[in-house]
Structures are given as C-alpha cells and as structure tokens.
Length: 120
Image 1 (cartoon, rainbow, N blue to C red):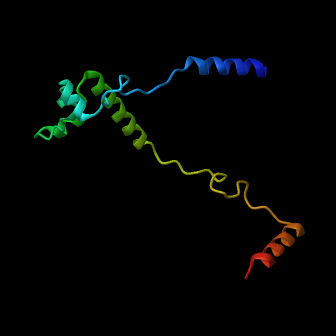
Image 2: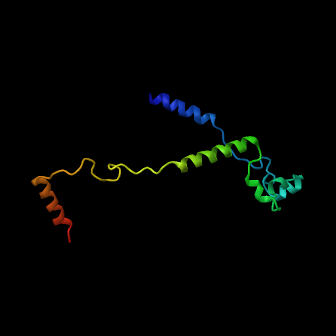
Image 3: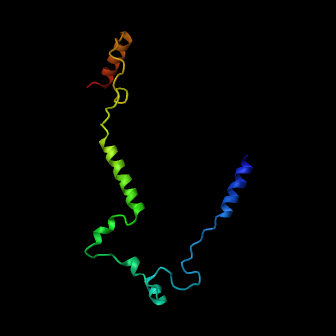
C-alpha cells in the first residue's frame, strides 16, 4: 500500500511543472513600466483609476447575470435577517436540563470540599 501511495505521489509531482520566468529571454521584466513603454503596450485600461463623476457606479453589476446574482444575495440576506432569533436550549447554555435534583450526602460532601478548596 505504501509503495502504491509513493508511486502516486511521484506521478503527481512529476506531472506538475511550475516555473516563473517573467523574462525568459533575459531582457527586462515583462511587468515593468519601462518594458511596457518600450514595447508600446497601452495599459491605460488597467491603470485608469476612473476618478470621474460616475466612478461610484462601478460597484453595480454590469451584466444581467451579475444583477441576478446580486438579487439572489439580497434575498438570502433578507430571509436570514428576518428569521426569529432562536434562544439556546438549556443544555447549550450550561444549565441543568431535568429540573432540580435532590443531592444526597455525597453531593453535600463534594460541595463542601469544593468550597473549602476555592472559597476565600
């Protein structure tokens, strides 16, 4: 069984090929501003902060699927907030769930020992 697991782990590890080469040709890093400017890459759509008058409108969905998802989320929040608050059961709150019981001499002795040890 161990050999089978080891073989599976080696197979998975050999299938993974992860390397990060931002500039495999040894040139400038592909993510640098200097490289983008030299290559003529227009990145204004990624760096535009949209500080116009309608910038706050970008928080709203732009597709029908986005609006549907927002509506479903709002309905779920409304339903969850509308649920009555449930009080914890007696056993969840650390209270006795069975009424009062009568303690015998052993219970009195335990109580007296506890008070003797922890009472000030």
